[in-house]
Length: 133
Image (cartoon, rainbow, N blue to C red):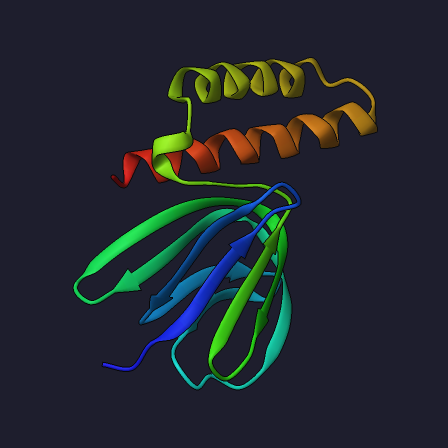
């Protein structure tokens, strides 16, 4: 089965760098499945889990926005932050989710509302990735 190199990079480090069979992401225009020899493209990414397929197994990463560049033999995800399930503190993610929900319920000004909305998306993304393990 054909493979390509997938790299997930944040400002701090390389989170993931392996040959894979497929990667599934949520781009600005919707969900994308990338296979080897995909046409080149660049797309912004939403806050959502990234599914990585290798052989008959799947892995998941919590990617919190960024961009994906697809080349013939390589896919690079430049993420604001990315975490593997083993690096996610579940209790901290649950606490962040609760705080964000409280801020959204209080209906403060527009800037605080958007920040709380993004914090809620990031927390739910982390919890979603952990639940898939």
